[in-house]
Length: 141
Image: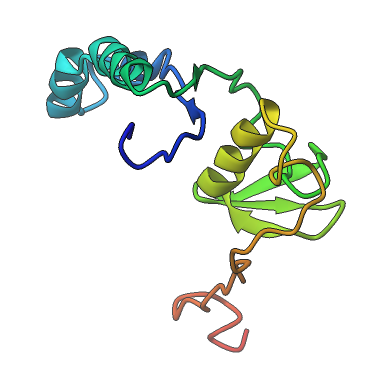
């Protein structure tokens, strides 16, 4: 990360609570073991040290509402169509939720090109829902 950042600031989110979404009895034993061994604190600390050696600023932005706030208009009048897609009812934007969150996190500490209302050089997603063969509409009912 420090090598490819080209002197730009690096934003690192802290995945608080990610270990605790998988509890005993929900059938995710292997995932719980992997998450228990994941040393994200060490990875974050190592990244901060590497960036500091190269003189790169590391920030830890507030991640609340980052995936549910529209990066174009700043509205929270949004809905997750699927886990990975967000739709804004105010401006009509349909976008990848992770990319939307990354833009919001970037705009939270930068007044540069990621500020609100800027069009991004990234293709917008079109949601196409295929008809299921077992649905009443597909059967002509």
